[in-house]
Image (cartoon, rainbow, N blue to C red):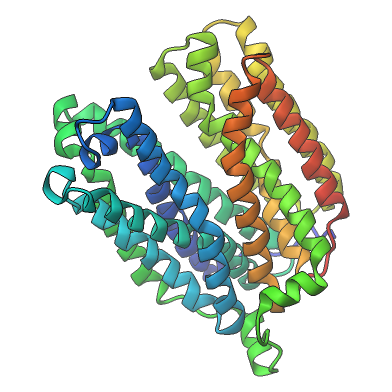
Length: 423
């Protein structure tokens, strides 16, 4: 499905909606990822000193993983009400569910004060974050796409996706500034709380701003004509839209591989495989995330002009080449990790195709639930399994990450090629 390249630009009202949606999405992803960046310090505060350091850190990452497990449940619940009661209410609620626990994480006393209640409370807060993030990305994509004109859905969706990945970039920058401004002992004592408090405060600000958003024209029309989903949207999905669910889960698998393997896992893999310094890998991660953000916006905008099938082939090939460039060619050129990482980020434009394919695959009555079900279940499965798969394969060959990314690019390309277009 292609559109006229000469279509009018986004209106001021649409740009305002995009800005508020992207700001909230960036803050939610920022809140979600800073936990991973600060996991070692969190482990020292919320688990007993008598435990070995590796065990405490493993427990902290277990809490991080709990957020992923909560995503499908939270996403499905919020999507249900988003399809039945309205997009705006749920879109505002997701920010509150993220801001409140993030702020409390920054204020929560440690194990020495609360004992076993400290990690248990942290687990509850982490589950709340996971539930919120499960509704944010699908809700945001549906919200901005239904506000945008039909000829600018790709651009609008891409700007929001860029805002989401920009939240990861924002988290990285804040952590770097934290370590640059404060002494190491200050950071480990209380400074680690600052990013959580900032995220919580700004999250409440984003929630307040989202109150001024209007319900989408698509939902208002469905509500006026009594065509909103009745009963359980999830049942309608499983009965009538199994192909769309399968194809959307396949493309989401590719999205997780691109982000997890080429961005999130890249620093520890490069430190282990090629003995690159932590400072260099952090710079490389920043470069990859920035280029990923630019790439998804550009590629998403191209869907307003070119067919999704053609772009899926081109972007799938680029994603595979980016993986091999980073993990196979970089070792031949010592000291060049940052440009190779930036190139791999630019090759991740396939990520921008995934939400657009899902938005087209589901009709408006079950669109929110369709995206949430497919995206969150696939992300929970493959986002959790990918690190384990890569860790198991890498000892056999250092290019295993590239092979895995290329394989998922093929899977996602097939998913997009056969995905139905009902929107």
